[in-house]
Length: 170
Image: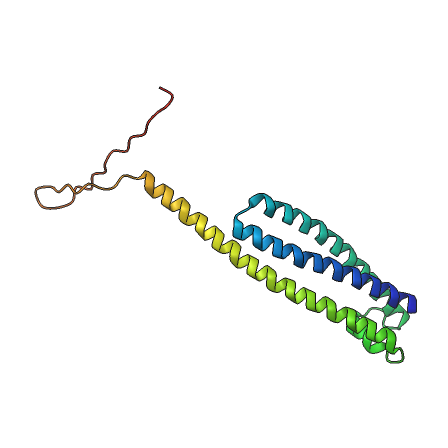
């Protein structure tokens, strides 16, 4: 059981390091969004995908270790969580404290990452709205304004000024 607890701790510390790195990348992503640096944003996203893949592998390893612990503790078939393991380690205060600290660190960094991701999501939404505004503006620039021509009944004829463009191929 002690080796399983040690394996679990090592895995959780690696997960914490990955989440901390994602948190740093989230700040880089925020700066790239604000600056409109698409190349930097692509680079950060590619790095995030790589770390996310590593995190998925670490999560699978953690679940496997917890399954093994459930068998050892006689909870076969039950879903064992880190909190359950901490409760089971009443007679081992060192391991209990280490696991509690690792769990709390993971929860803390995950919460901060969730907040940073929500902020980046808002920034991306605002950037998309600006792009939409710019596109609408450019489309409206291509349209000629209506003339102030009226017919004999004082109704607007709705005629548009002709739009001419210079053709460089001629």
